[in-house]
Image 1 (cartoon, rainbow, N blue to C red):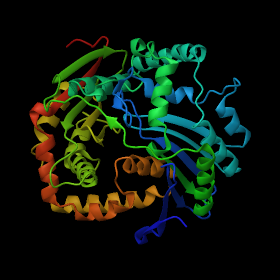
Image 2 (cartoon, rainbow, N blue to C red; image 1 turned 180 degrees about the horizontal axis):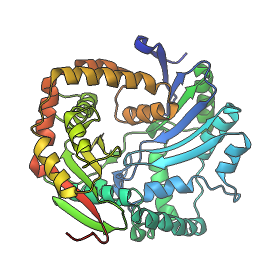
Image 3 (tube, helix red, strand yellow; image 1 turned 135 degrees about the horizontal axis):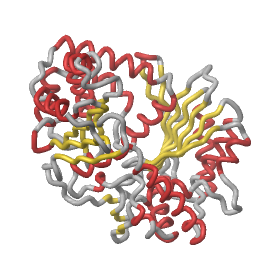
Image 4 (cartoon, rainbow, N blue to C red; image 1 turned 90 degrees about the vertical axis):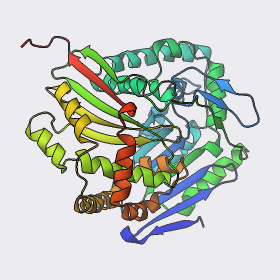
Length: 429
């Protein structure tokens, strides 16, 4: 039987296993649930454009190739489409690429094992030709141009370029029209062979399934492929200065109201802090400062400077980390000035921290009722060597001193950048 980890707090159990090929498997049983959700993910994302495969020389590939590869995995040698294979067994499939992962997924209320077989097969069966790669370039170009017309996407992209001087996090996940035009079948196979090896991947299943049957199914699949575990992939990143690339970026687009996003460039490692603790502390800090129940949020909302679309989030990976907050506002200059002034100085109270910790624990419990969000978080933590089930313990241990220490670290002026999008024509005074 696969190893088990129990979480008595919410009566949940996580089953984990690693088969001889190096592929990790995680199963979270949900007895009585009608829907079953499964993902097949690889620790490979948009920032992995310079790497050294195990025992080989370093390789550089075009920006956007991870996202391009995700798209191409759905095409079959016979000209068919994998989405049709899922539809035939009543399953709904999708995929996404982010900075550090590519994930293929499906959900179903029927014929799970048939759909699971489709997932295991197509993710491990690449098919790239000069013809179908050229065809895909046109499709991806249209997608990139569509993103260029999306204000929220442009707001974030401009912020990342303002925050980062050389780290590939500054590059759009889909790449550029120019970069994808240089992608070849050979480059796609090179990336596939490096990053889609089972040693770099994870299968996660959440639903009313027998964990041992899942593990045995995956083990049989891997055995027939004859693959063995491989060594570590070295991901190569240029040294990133602590300071931002540029403190402010403005752009005009066809929007009804201006958009503002303030970003703070953080460091992913701090001596004495675990990575999970840093992520938890960061979320609590942002919640206390600008969460919906914070005094600053209520004041900004009451003054009409923000609306319910205002958000604040912290993103951390092994090689970069940042906080971003903002949204629509009638006066981006005033909102920027207020946030810049208040974030380092707003009072942090013990009672607010304890209340927010209780709220976050409740959200964690609720997470187990939302398979899509649970799988995303589990995969994200797994690839960084972190344990999802340690979250409650880490959350409980957060102190006000930790929150204040984080606040002082991440609100340094030299690590702040601002992205603004204004309407094409603004009314005069």
